[in-house]
Image (cartoon, rainbow over all chains, first blue to last red; front, side, top):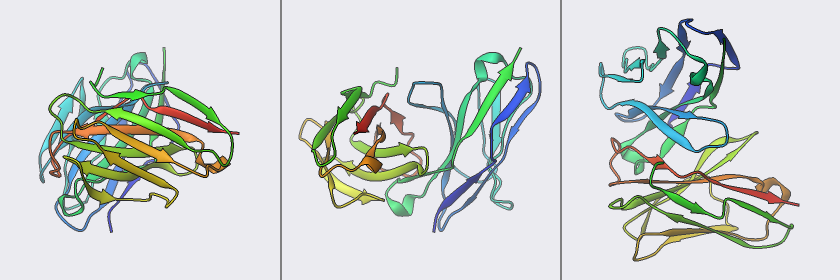
Length: 113
Length: 114
C-alpha cells in the first residue's frame, strides 16, 4: 500500500540555521510528492511538489528532490526564519488511487530568534 | 487565500446529533476531497468527488456521507456523532483527478462533539 513516514518532531532551531525534515515513502505506482505547510489556525498550503524521479521542487528557499532509489523527499532550507515556524506535512498521491493524498504525521518546526 | 471556502468555521454539538459541513471549491476545480485531522489519527483522507461522482473512498465511517452538487460545491454529512468525531475537517479541491494535480485546502471546520 501507500504510506509516508516523516521525521518526528518537534524541531526547534535558531534563526539562520539549516533545516532538514526527512520524508520517506512507500508507493505501489509512480506517485507525485508534495510538501504542505500549516501555519497556526490555518489550512494547509502547498509549499512545493515534484511529479517524477529526480525532479526538484523549490519555493521560498525550501527545496526537496524526488529520489526514487531511496524513496525519499527530504525538505531542506539553508537559513530558516522565525516566520517559517509551522507544521510541515509530506504527502504523496498515487494516480492509481484517484489522486487520494497520503499524508505523513507532520513535523512541527519552531524557529527562535 | 486558497480560494476554497468552508462553512461553518466552528461547530459545537452533542453526541448522537447530525451535522452538515459545506465546501465550495476554487473556481474551475472539478474535484473535491474531504479530510479529517485529529491529534491521534493525523490527517486522514475521507472521500473524493469528481464532477459530481464519487471517485475514491478512504477511511470514511458508514455514519458519514458526502455528495457533490451540480454547482460543484460539496457537503459532508456526519450523523450519530460520537466524542471521537471531534476534529478539524478540511476540504480541498483540484482541477482534475490526476496524481500530479495540486490540492488546494480550505481553512477547515472545527467540530466539537460534547
